[in-house]
Image 1 (cartoon, rainbow, N blue to C red):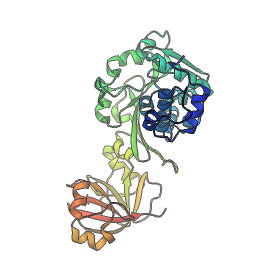
Image 2 (cartoon, helix red, strand yellow):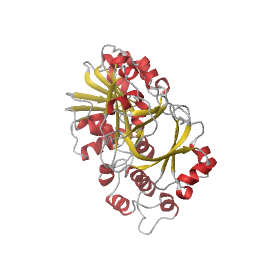
Image 3 (cartoon, rainbow, N blue to C red):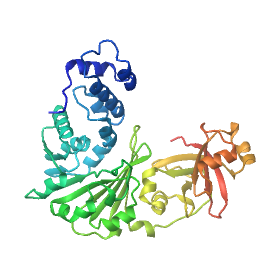
Image 4 (cartoon, rainbow, N blue to C red):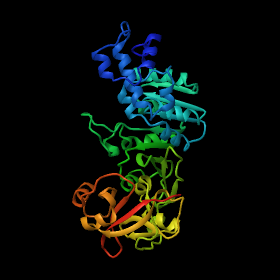
Length: 400
């Protein structure tokens, strides 16, 4: 069992203090808290506060016991976990880096059987109890090292899932696969002998091209953004080696008001996609973060019939609205020089949202240089046009 068991009084207190300041609870315990496991209760409240938007169904389930807040921070969100689960099918999957079990829970709704492996016994016990409370009874919980566990299995599984820890011994963040724990590159031959397919979750900062040279059996790469921020880069591996030009790359942006259509392409097609250049027309298109991470700079224009502003300015334009573009769409109001006089003439109140794309100054430097206040309904894009001119494009959000 977990290191402590929450009593009914503990859980009632948690439910009635979900928005409380945790430090204040510990420094000045409120009336009625005598006899409670107050430190553990405070930790539960803090963990649930971190989970509210990330794990809404877990947050809403008062019967669950949360692991320490750091485990909640490191866990996948329910939305990204569900996306990963949509990539797998078959009979069995083994999650070798189980953690809080959010990914395991999503996989258990897709696969017939799931093996969850976690080296920390208290965390494994908490997760096992939580999965049962969530009605997921097709998960077997194992305590120990995931690599040792899979190495001991007599038959390969359909899928392996690994989410290596991306922190070093001092708690600092790492990005490269060789710096993560476990080091997947060292154990990859063994892992491929024990699974027909592997899903590997990596840092959103990982260089895709360099990683494909390391993971030569990659079949597909998925870049997953949530509300415009890249959260995960997923590599789907199999056997045998695949030419890197044949790897499919999918960029997806999960949004609260409806997910944008995924953008999928064959890696080799990007280099040969035709490019049209043009000055700003009626509409301006800014690719979402996942599409930019995927590197589909030429294809983003070719697929949707858009022109690029310049070879290295990843902004696109058209006279006719393309409403299903995977990114933000703006109506162009003007194009002007990047100086204070031009801003004063085109931006009422000197208030605008500023974005920099292929421009010498950073947002902070340029905002100060132009005397801009942040916010408002105007969106400025500082960029380079096809003739090399540095310009500000004045826009507002398009009505779609």
